[in-house]
Length: 467
Image (tube, rainbow, N blue to C red; front, side, top):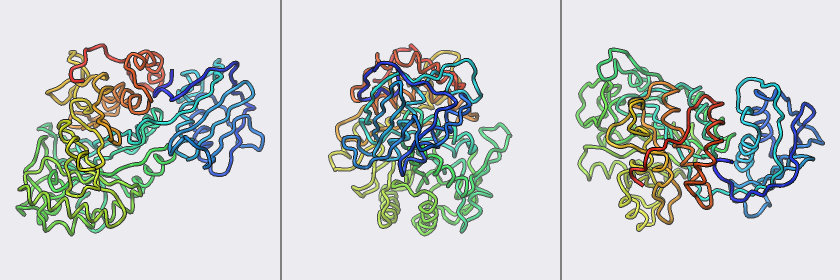
């Protein structure tokens, strides 16, 4: 009853029982996975799980393992102990999450639990993801999300073996990343006077140290963070701080409404963009950087030249640009959000594609049309079944869900909108043979796991609207 479903799982005889005498043995390079296992199990079990020379739990990093790829793992459990092996640290991190799910659901609690037998069932698991890009985009620009909220979401992603956190850091309504050469971006651009007439100031930004801490925290859990700096449109927060960067250099406040602002960077702002990207590359070491690129009211030729130059800056430094629209360079990742036609055209040109169609991956749409649903983007209903059946044309890298936060202010609302739909995405992208009915069966137990994490996540029974 694991989510996402493993590639191969075979039940064995007796399982292994954790107790206060249980310890961990590690091979060189597997230390972080051991620390992760200790960190996630200690709150509920109270067990220290020390690292020792003769531990019953063996965590082994073996780069010579074949057939597991960059994220796969092998896990064996019998009455004598546990063996977790992988060729990479990411594979070991995924294996740790499987151990968590195999234990009683109380293992996910944040406080010590008494009178529970911490038994792992006897199993042999060999597990490899179907697709390499299994992502989630979190919009921290519309409504700022504090570090502890982002870290908790990283933990939830890791539990489901998702591996890309796409952080939407800038938009018309807020700028969240510090750029030392342009301090007004955060002192001015990160705050708006109100939101849609509510009269309540809203804002916030991260320090460089906080962002670097997120990167390290995510990496320890097998997740890479892809930052997004919107350009050349969705730039009004930046232009509130530095009006001279705009097409029309007039003072504009940080936008207090939703929609598409007509404010945009001019071509003369490319020097500024390069300075911003230079700082981004220092903070985020991952391969991909997102340039936004959508919903811009600039003339098509100017828009294209801007994105091409920004993409070239990244490519010249060994990074890969990603964007919602083509950047003009076939090496850039395209994330088509309008319809499958965008994906088909990009694939025909040989471009890498990550599927993000709004009718099956936008989690700001409500999960049902029921009266109890919290506020969301109007226009569609996106069910878990819609997400599970996200279109995946042959040759795509994978897919990701998007959670825009116009209507989302709190952690509780954020997590309600994300689950169980994000679990559906994780299962359909990881499992070798995705099957909706099997997923809904496994979610009966998995919902109780999420409940231990204070997330209501039963699969809703509404009909599928768009799959």
